[in-house]
Length: 430
Image (tube, rainbow, N blue to C red; front, top):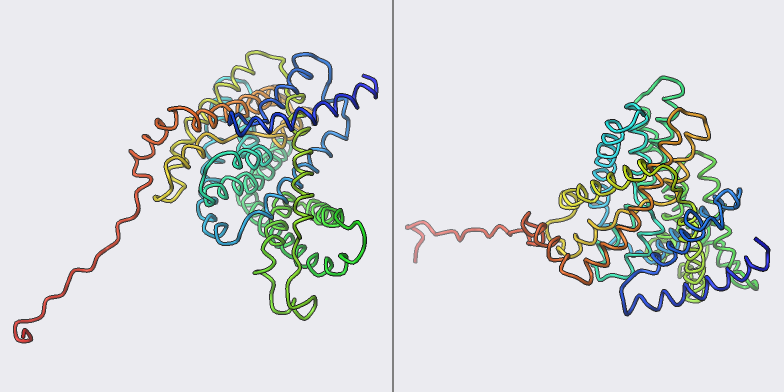
């Protein structure tokens, strides 16, 4: 494909992405579905573009997109709903990961020749949700801030599981040794230390930002500093996505998080991002996510139809299991409609695609099977998430979900214990 054609395609895609975004307000069909279909037509269906054609640019592009999306999402998170959502986030992230490992790993174990360890590895690869897809979708539907925050945080926090567990299982398969205590400790350390480094980086940058503002054209300095933080955290073998999210949340709430010592270093008023910088990040995320979803469609590989069908079966089971997971995770007073959206939103992203390619690259037996099934799960879960969220928003399917959740007691406020009135003893009666 010539350079001129590529440039024309880039321009047309940007125009189409704005048109698809304008359709959301009228149709409530997310633009990511159309962008995903463009990628499918260019990649596995039309054969015009191959993921290998991007070389090292592909993984770098997806990482940069993920950093921007998490950071921009973190800026919009206010501290009060964030704190109130942590309990539900921890529950839904853990329950969803464990259930996915059991369901996906169990089906793969019985219907393939992968064996127990590789089957569990497959389940752990798809145990999280895609930050890029979730953070894009939650903006289109009417949900409470708390429920929206839980979904965004789940997609970010699940990286601790989906990055740590598969890589550890892969190492255990090659070495023949597995220590569950070591795996758990590594995941906890990755989450805590990555969060601390992200928060520390945000405080440092809020100090430096005061000195950068007088310079010209400094809007790119914030993402540049974020890239440095992300790279350092990744080099320390911690979770870069968690650090990026923590950096954004802290910088977005620096006006209330700034400790007293900072006032002596910077000024009486903490330095935060201004409206111009926030608008720049929003436009950058829009541009990056446009090509991100096209790239997802291009990356899907349709080779073995049996494994594609098996991946679709696994995805269907995951959506069924998601309903009790949501009920067990969220607070009793959560609106049933919010729970319906949460049950319909478990897309798998390119993080799973990258991890699914590692067994094949390392010549592990069954690597092709893992890759084919995971790519199928990525495709079907993204499509089902898009379709189901649209149906929940526009059709009577919402009533079905809401009936299930109401039947289990969701949406009812907790009964307050009313103290019984105390009666006076006879001798004290008037």
